[in-house]
Length: 490
Image 1 (tube, rainbow, N blue to C red):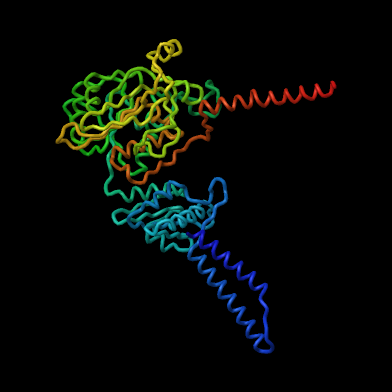
Image 2: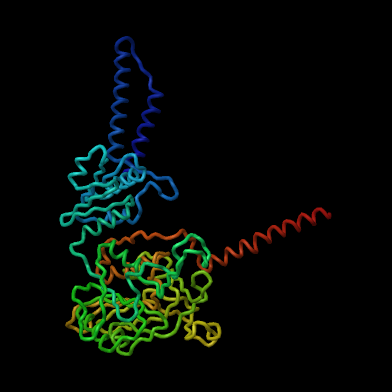
């Protein structure tokens, strides 16, 4: 609508200018001068009215390919979805380019929804306003809602949008992470075994120390959960000790030792009480019989083996599954390419009172092997079909029990530190947590994660690049040279 107003005002001014060029002034003496003054006054009034209309209906146009001067789509979605008033006061320094850019982005966000009242303040020019809010640092956003007030120190509009989400929460949900069976540690922020203490790349460099990581860890997932206003907590599965009632969701990521039957009974009791449970399993994990029965009762059946997909895989590894097609579900809404470095089949097992959905699956040409090192030998006799990789189920354990929610994924590495921030892996995990917390209808936003610049290619893209650069281009040069040689011989 603002763009239409701007275009309409510009068109009206052009029409007035063209009409003025063809207008003739008749009369003589004071009547001629009076008519001229009237025309000048009318032109000034039209120009003033056009400027007022454009100012009141200002349009923002960003012609850069990267949309460098436009708020991020994630932050814009959060602001458009506001249903209660939010006051946002941003304190910056005018001489700081990043601060000025952030203030401009916030002012543009304020135009998207009248529920967001944006005020930008230069601390150097208005220190009293900063003192009134208790602000002492540049680039500080103060977010005030009817129930909360918090500060966010950043120049990123996505971080401020995350702050708005945190401020709008009535209470802080607790996301529990199961321990006791060698699960991924949420305090582990390292990505792989690496060297520290020096700047040389040689492993024998003097002063460098080897930091050995036995497993990936979920530190990046924990940071994302904290930025979204949730409280992560470790919970040990222990027989005779019920799970805490304030656990809004329980995540069991990559258990390495089998669960005891009594621990499986604890999980069933948790689900029977309306709990939410996410289980991330690796292909080599042996599912205990009682735990398998509890999951089957909840609508999920776990199979053995490793899925090999010769069609949809990431780069050249056929066991690193690439997923671009998803089922219709809140967890997979508007998701892009995600990948799973080694996954086992997870089948939906719906029953009366329980709805189970396969979130995504491998291609119809995929198959399952038991020995991932000898998958080529097993490929000949393996059944070729599509195998589900993740299942979401919801329902009631009994007719009188409150509803539960369960997500089981046949891979755990995709959520680890090494693979969490790449492609849509983080979106899948965080959307799953949101669905477990029954917040899937709310606006969602993935916290920004620091990663190195990468170029992500699927197997099909790599194949076409190879054909173009190794076959077609050299072949074209060879054909051109052959043609020139033949022409000169003639």
